[in-house]
Figure 1 (tube, helix red, strand yellow):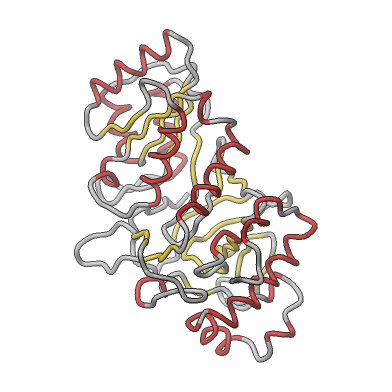
Figure 2 (cartoon, rainbow, N blue to C red):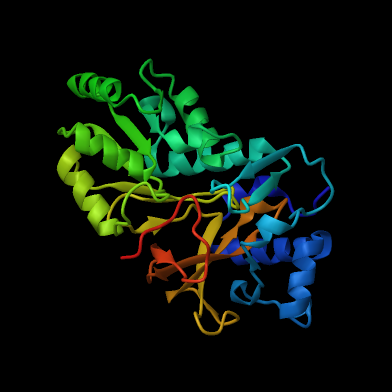
Amino acid sequence: MHPFDVNNIFSVSEANFEQQAIQLFHLQYQMNPVYRKWCELTIKDPNNIKTIEQIPALPVGFFKSQTIQTGQFPLDHFFESSGTTQTINSRHWVKDLDLYRKSFNNAFEMFYGEPKDWCIIGLLPAYLERQHSSLVMMVDELIKESGHASSGFYLYEHDQLSQTLQLLESKQQKTLLIGVTFALLDFAESYPQQLKHTVVMETGGMKGRRSEMTRVEVHDQLTKQLGVEKIHSEYGMTELLSQAYSKGDGIFVCPPWMKILVRDEEDPLTVRTKGRGVINVIDLANADSAAFIATDDVGMIYEDGSFEVFGRIDHSDIRGCSLMVV
């Protein structure tokens, strides 16, 4: 049993986040062999950790080559990143899928309200064609919880999707169209329309399907072709059990149990809570894997804790949900 009670994370506040994070750091230092070895390379004494900026962040690439596990549990469930046949995919072993469900449900309700108030449509062709996608599991569960007759997944049936959206619009039904970027662009190009009651959310993911575009270009094209004022976005990854959301302009906000830090591009041990740098994520829901992760994404954290993602650092290999440099 963990001394750290993972059920408490969803009631964490700004005031006690640091305390919870440091408690989880000590647990993972003791019970996660891969993380402990990494810490031994980067800090002398774990007892000197007094702030979240001092907690070592495990490079996200370790999920490709190591079994990242805090404590012992059967390796029954995992999420796997998308990629080509030439790439090694990340594998995130998950002790308790219900914890992931609680995390995305709590976050969704925090930002968007109850799923049952929405018709939820997933346009995730590349993800539906493979197993072990955390994104597909999340959208699938939200679709089920929505309970709306028109909620569901679409692969490439753009004509049917367009007709469904028009019907929902005519009924003024609040709708969420969540899609991988290239699929949303393809759909919007072929079926331009004016959506007044639909939120369009992109999850990243060009994957060489189209010439690389900046986020501003993507959002500009989608707002014009789909008639929405803003494009919403989701920031998540295989190696996390939590997501941040943007309601427009690429500015993301985390749920209370997740926090973004930035490390200096030249000196990765210099970590700040605001400014520009390479993104580190603290995800308290990752109690059974690694809660402190150094990503390959460059971004900016603003005074209020919201953040923007600019793209990947140059030497990082291209991941499935590749982000676009502004």
